[in-house]
Length: 471
Length: 122
Image 1 (tube, one colour):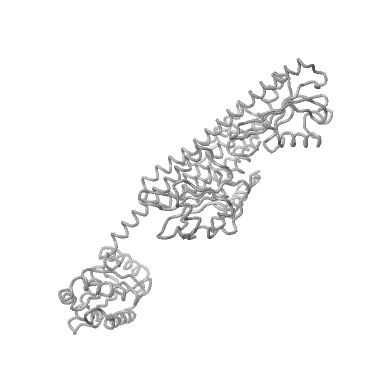
Image 2: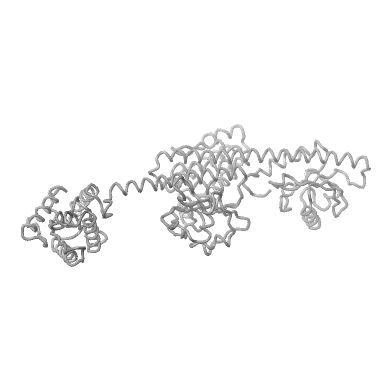
């Protein structure tokens, strides 16, 4: 029998059943798989067959090639004569949608000894055997299908349960990919997230998955465009799959099904789900796969939404910098690290000089431009490990992990000079800066307080300068 | 004969427990139990008795299979478990990659000497 998901049966148990049926019906039974290969053995010895087959096993090459060629062209049923003159009835098992194999029924005596009337009786008997065996196979298929459906439902249940804790996006993606590999024995499964104008593969499992994870596919890539041009999944050929970045050298066994589901939510396209499996899903299987795709879409849409909310909650809208709350949280973390590892930590308080006057004179829009440009100058003057935020109004705070006072002074001077020389609209703008180095017993508040005091000193000494906290 | 089979079952139970622990570490409980359910279903088409395998979030047990030997002493224990493990490891290899599945297989071979199984499906 073909090794597919739905028809899997013990040959031993089948042979027992087939032999019993053969005895009861006084006819010989033999079954071939869909490729013309042997599945079961002859149930009863036939004199002529016993001679060539040494009892029960079909061994004669002539017989095998005869069956392969005759069964290959068999429509539904036919009366055939084997190379040794035995008349036999051949049937195709299964349905057009689910082909199972072929059934051969022969009389227990040589056909030459059977008269016309007996031949008719034999044909009727063979048809009854065919109906019985076909029904049994159908029942086995149904039973196996139910088992598969139970597996699908269980995993869908688990995924839906996890959806209530959607913050664990990685877990949901992991479970979706694992479930598809386990249930459909998929060779490859991948989930892509939409990030702006591209799809980033966030999760991939199975063969070639290491080539895929983290890969980015532009939305304008012809195949990706095709995927998102409709709601339904897209079936791909191997050649089409290979056009996707990261999958150029991929190999799959012939007959493999490659399906890509676009993941849609109320917000639009959120990603895609791809599956490369050895078996085409039937109607119900396709519906269940669509359920996985829908879950993945909801999970991704929710996660994207939550991530955006989180980002907005910690970001200053005007400058794109961290806001006061997240800046303080990060300062707590950095102070802890400094205390634990004994590394230095400096902070810089930046305040734009005469900002209120600039705002009042040239308007809030011009004032906003100054704030945005100052943020840009700060960003360009610090390392990627440094943290900058808008503390409020025209004040900025910069956290410099692993930096002593001297290093912080260099950064402060660089920022001061860049602001002083930048061609702001209407007039020159300057800034004053206060620097403080974290001490062992410092809290976030005390450190900020000392930096603020240093800033006050810089202002007092004439502005457009930095001042180092001496303590 | 039955005593020998019971010993074999105990041997396989140790092996299955090792596999369960190793794969739960990488896949998580939900996926591991789904994987076991899938392989139990597949093997049960040939050996109904595999449905007596007990598993949940606490682990895996062959106690009911051992008890079932009283009723069916002819149960081909070795073949049944070999098929179970082979199919389990074949899917595990897809999930974790052949390299990590081989690592698990080799670790098991060291810890449970005398039990042979393959990473490839037969």
